Image (cartoon, rainbow, N blue to C red; front, side):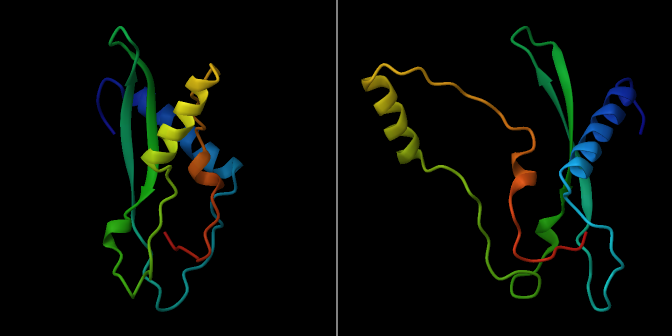
Length: 121
């Protein structure tokens, strides 16, 4: 890795790996015969404040799921996201009752999901 922000990116990558380790995201195992592991890559993002200055450097280790073949590597796909209609209903109720709404980000929310199948990466 090269560049002026090299040290910041290395820190961000280490934080991601620590978070994965702490959340028991994976187990190190021997590769079974006949199994082709999914590759992985790093995704980098600079998060900026209202003033436009970089506040944090984010690094995410992601699987190259796009290399998988349907009916060979997987049978179905699923992503848990809120429907727009549900969000609108929720916001309507909070506005009607004059409730305060808060937004928060759970940094490791994706790590806490359960997979039914074994993924080799």
